[in-house]
Image (cartoon, rainbow, N blue to C red; front, side, top):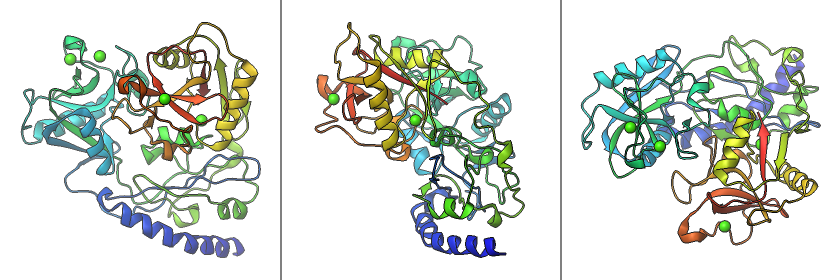
Length: 410
Ligand SMILES: [Ca+2]
Ligand SMILES: [Ca+2]
Ligand SMILES: [Ca+2]
Ligand SMILES: [Ca+2]
């Protein structure tokens, strides 16, 4: 009983904030409040899926178990398409299965004809090979294979005119690489499947960034590694973020929710790699000291089963500075003062996003070194790096080979 009272009080305290967020997210149809919580010995965020407060959008076609889809029939560039989907509370469609490709194909074929495009049977979706030619990743940073669908249209991808770096889908559900700009295409947005209640508390992600990369919301949920005191955990809520749906702090509000069994949540049972430094509550990192472009660094981290580091907190910035100092710097590269990390503005100038697609603010750390970003190199500084001394951000030409980069394990 006592705990219900406590939970109730916290709920009331949060209600005002949630209401505020709902106002901000009116175009989203639904709303997600994700709550990063800090406990004494762990900074992992905690999330609970709550009741959906609003209705499905009637301009989207919802497919059970997959999501909602909409073909925008006014052709535009990939960059604009990405932003329009975001404004609608979703993202450019990411295809995770053959079933989803079929669903999207059906939506495409049933929609009105695309106007303003020379190729009305193709539409942009959420993948690209902007990081490295021929290596396609979704807007959430995964390879197509990992995402679950990589069936291409006949003779595609062809990188036509050496200028096709953005993802598209043919109305038959097969993939095609398309030019990011210059030619206009229709596009397909996706919003998470609307659900009324939480039915399970199924997963715990160890890091904020993990949650972000899984924000097809239906899967995740409530998370705390050190759950010694629910009361303390909940009352130390730091911030609220909006995505697709309302999330409350406790399963007590979520009809049908199953309380998490924290003992069963895998935290430390992953085999540790001895080339990575594990820091509780922050993550696992590795400094490479070799001359590499941002694109090389991105690929090397991926090849070793990691990703180019994403800085999610002041603490992580500080940690990376320490790890860089420990590793020292090597000869053979330019600019010994910086190390490549996982953010860029390759989508749109001055809109800095992580390689998993969040803004720096959403990721949790967005401090630039004084005078940065300065867009040097005729404006070609489009890739992210960290200043080795103060841990703050810098923009750098993606092709510049510098002496170090930092990878991070999921
Ligand atoms: Ca390409
Ligand atoms: Ca193509
Ligand atoms: Ca991180
Ligand atoms: Ca710079």
